[in-house]
Image (cartoon, rainbow, N blue to C red; front, top):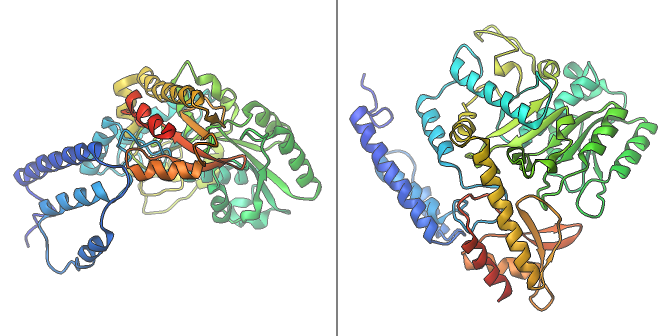
Length: 463
């Protein structure tokens, strides 16, 4: 029997394909940088082409590579464009791109140490270094995840497991009342899906009012916990947010930690985006109190500019993590809770995700990432200063690289301004609300965005 040389080309064929692919990718990035951000693909024609692909006859792979890149150039919002000021999706760092090429080529299986000891230990070392940078106690552990939702779900599972020793075996039935998790109304509402998934139901979520500026009210939090306890509910976890999606606001981390300690609750900090401030000595104070958390979420695929799907979970309680995910089966080569990741996390088969951040951090150091983070903050500060001069109101008071802007009445509504800017294709901003007020939201995670790109946005906003 012969090997399919398209699936498994020989060395010469592979070299040619790699060379061509590099050229195609570089050409696409150049085209994207000079083009519009918004999708412009003719989807009717695209769907006809796609529906014709019945996979009965093989097509030339080189042609398929070009076709894929060409359609993605025009068929997606372009996060690599310097005018993308949208959500937290970054232009990925080159080291993280290189990591994906390496990992895709060698495809190590990180679920057990014995299969990929070097890869597992690289990730473990990186997690330890970040735990130290966060300020978590010695002996803290963690792992890479598919994203912030998985990391937050891991925190909730740990909290439920610690709150009731029977939860692991009996689920929500182990609790004599309704388990409760407390989050800000401005937090990421993936928590609703997490509560559903974990079997305690969406009603387990308590949405705590804010202080009027986008941060969780510690006073309201304390009152709600007391009322829930009095009526027989079971408070389990407080999840503070360090960098809200809408406005980059930080909940009162010390106050939340104090309440969690007094009420004997698991204290989690969702710093999926804002956690990158640990890199900056200048801005680290914004996260003061995060070191008191039982667990923390940070996404490297946001402000650390890794490729998508590089979440991280950290906890000061390795023993709880092991209790939460313990499993043993005959077909696994080992079952070591200290090194085998399938014993300590939700995923079983595991991609070597950590190489993306490892290569980036190793190549620039914490100082290099500090420059990246501060670059975005400096540009937002500049944008705020200029927009204020032209009568715009800054609705959020954040030290993160995000601004929420309200236009003066003579300019029009935030909705109209967002539509106008997105339609231009030169920039991508989003429409959201902060404390019920519609705002134009601009966020900078792209390390290539420069002052000239912000000036071009300002010109559109004041025209």
